[in-house]
Length: 308
Image (cartoon, rainbow, N blue to C red):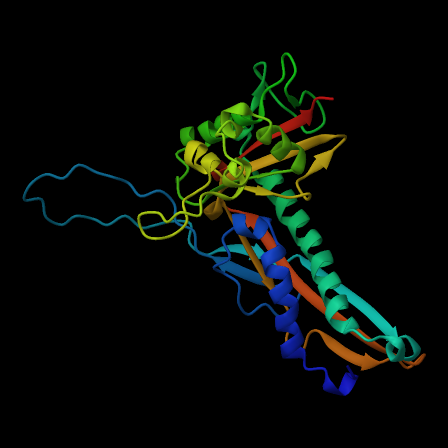
């Protein structure tokens, strides 16, 4: 593919078509405010509504005074600006029989996925209300000390119990039941798949049912939720980007409305051009994004360490 044939809008769509489905934490945030982001440092106004007062009504009362809702239009700053930049030498290009551009854009998308997911996860972990962190022996667990030990040994907390405890934290905080999530790592999933409470169904497809849900239609004809979501209200996602420090992992749960996220590929990006310092075509692209936790009580966390 030549530089002259490179159309930014087409390749921007290709980049997003690969990037968006690959993002895990983007499924756990509100993205209603993505729009006209032009540059790093822009501010997105997020409309959030505080609690509404419920009052007793007396028959024949007149001149009721409406409550003025507070908290609308809170700012979310676009703090991040990441880019990719690669070049293909003319000699290499002449020897290739496959579309190296397609593969390179795919690699760039997956690299950007890791950066964005890591940013959203870190933002969530830093914004959780302290009352929504699971405790160990009466003491709030820490990301660096006193983690909850998850495993199958004596004294370990099993993975399913931890999910139930996270859901209980959300229930006590009056977090809406709809669009709840939990993000775990592959080690956590492995422990769930070893739990006889879910695997002893006597069918070869039991594990797939646990992970993905039934393929049978629900009341409205859609897929039924997974076994875990049915029991805990938490839709489970798996990611290698959950926060980790000194072998202590942050398992994050909550509902989508607690955190807002906005991203934008600037107009004209990605762009292709000829390098002036050699015989090569170069491509570079910029991704702008930001996130903010607007409802700290809408998230919960457990700092865990997996037993040997």
